[in-house]
Length: 326
Ligand code: NAI
Image 1 (cartoon, rainbow, N blue to C red):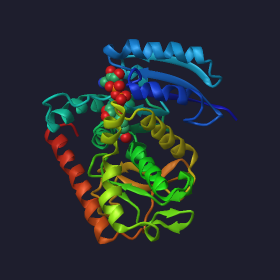
Image 2: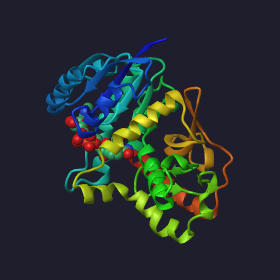
Image 3: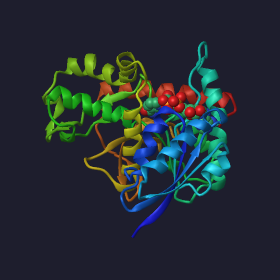
């Protein structure tokens, strides 16, 4: 049976938005049996770009795309939303302190959380891409008291996919042979890409690579891959970020291959991560909901790395609390 979903995309006039729109409309986000209504939210300065993208969507004549609307009003954009992709955010400007960045984004994600609370559909699923993604998701969730908090997630799937891709390259196997990789913590350079439980074609990865390579080359390269892309490409990750966003929502709704993927979601206290912090975990999609994979052994090295990234998230939470954003 064919259903229809309303998908709201913020920052639709930006780079990731442009890379996302055509994949959403082609059916890659929700699958071939779901028709799509697209609501595009922008700030006034971005409306022209979003409207232009909407014209191009018409010109692509996607069979599954029923309607596209463009607005700068959050209430209109989130009305009836089943899926919200929160991509638009305030980038760090020259001389901007971390606290200024958190405050500027709080002014975006607080009202957007409230608008979701007021108008989204009861099955709403939210993924925050705009940085600082984890804490922006925390703010949005705190401003949407009627929506179950586990519907608010942040994107660490790009980090996960980077971790899989770089490992597959090292081992010279297809990415599809890799399983059991986890990104823990914050979508920042403190993140911990964990290979403790990873396998390649079913074999434990730690039997195939040197520990020194993992610690000294692999982990820093995954964690700093965004900077590497900027250096080589002269521009930030865009298509890979859009691709990871598609994967995240697709797998949330439809399930995934492999044992688990990585998702930043509000902690239930698992693995010693304080309750409520939006932190990345190994998670599997079960009947349309994320479930943190439990019972994994965490060795001393992993414990320390997880704790360090979680401490950064706790500091961000304290900062936004101090700003009155929660
Ligand atoms: P961009 O600057 O090209 O686009 C952002 C768009 O958001 C702009 O068109 C802007 O007008 C719009 N916008 C700003 N405030 C808005 C608001 N309140 N409501 C609606 N739209 C708003 O940036 P790009 O390259 O598309 O990246 C978007 C975000 O994604 C950035 O914060 C970036 O840091 C983040 N990002 C996150 C990744 C992740 O893995 N979590 C990976 C890559 C990027």
